[in-house]
Length: 288
Length: 288
Image (cartoon, rainbow over all chains, first blue to last red; front, side, top):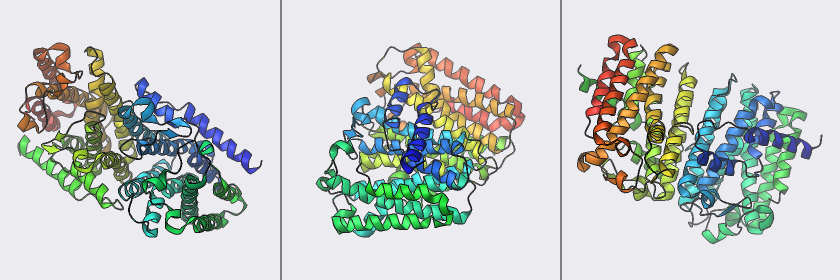
């Protein structure tokens, strides 16, 4: 199986699981608004990372599915709340109108809250012996010292002078934290050693930093049709991006360096790391 | 020690714990917005219920503190998001301007998200042997089949014809679920039997239903100064309340019935139930 086939296989596993995910007791409108964003043709990178990391350390992808789904739900919630008029005020996401455009702001806020809470509910229902450890890893990444720290700085520091340390903090929080947790949670579920888990953490960090730099570059130079969203907004709104700090050429170079570091972090896993190493290369060269 | 002294003792334990709760890694502005709502002179009913239920079944209040704090954080998050302009658009809460009035909408959304996520982070850090079970109980109550179901119906059904079944569903979700979880989680932490936990669930349900009816009555007839918020808004905005369904007199009678049921649900605990039974009476006669 080549890389692209493996990638599609994992993606389909995640999609199928999300598609049939029970949302018992939720009012129809809430369920609909949650599913609108959750099932909207995402890359499923967080889900794919969870399953493949778990398998890399000898675990079963099947058992990691609730955690892959939880990470996709947390990602979807963060996008819904980010897109709100009071935040980034985006009307287009993945080529579709954003949640509040379709369901109104009140339901969009609740759908985000619902996806975040349901992520923990799904994980809490897992009978996996290391479920609580994986949940702890994920909540920390999503939390006020992780993703929410990055998002807060992103919102509050908008328009200030670009500064490398600050931008690094923002990117680590808003992007790298939630790309690292799938890897470390997957490894924890597989029963990996602490040393292996820390290697996964280094991989996730560098992958995440590269991913955000590429995102910033695509906002400057990407194809709006392929990206499925309005581009050029970062510059217009004074977002703190890596290209704004160091220029486009150096930013591209930094992304390449991060990917090299990501790949070398996994040498401890030998040939089993092949998929995640290819995924790192793929992230660098993506056009969407 | 009389009831009021016990009540104050539990309340002070909760307050002291919340006051010193670590929020490591959070940007200052996020921390400030979270603490503004979390430490704003609430009744701490959810925290008090957690500690006292745990003690009723022979557990230690100390060990239940992270869960008491988590429930107070979930309550605070729900109020912040509820008060947003797109939701209930409230500007006054507990006698103070609401979160978005002080910090702006973007930070208020993030502070709510932060409190919800931090609730799970704090619980996930507990080393209590039944921590995961208590977390599971709490996330279900806060989730899309619990509190969020009630809030969704509350928002989407506003202005429709009052209907007893619907109003019961709304109250069970938006109020009773998050007053039941402290009791059941406290009991689970204490190692109570499933039968005892179910008795606690009945107590919480009836306490919650009575609590919401009293809330609706206070919105009609309470003292705005004591309540610390704008009153009379329910009727104005066509909120579905119990008095709107059955009239003020019957609503009062129903609240009394719920409190009688709540108290009798605890007979299985004998004299150890005295505090929670007094708390039920107290909830009925509160003026704020």
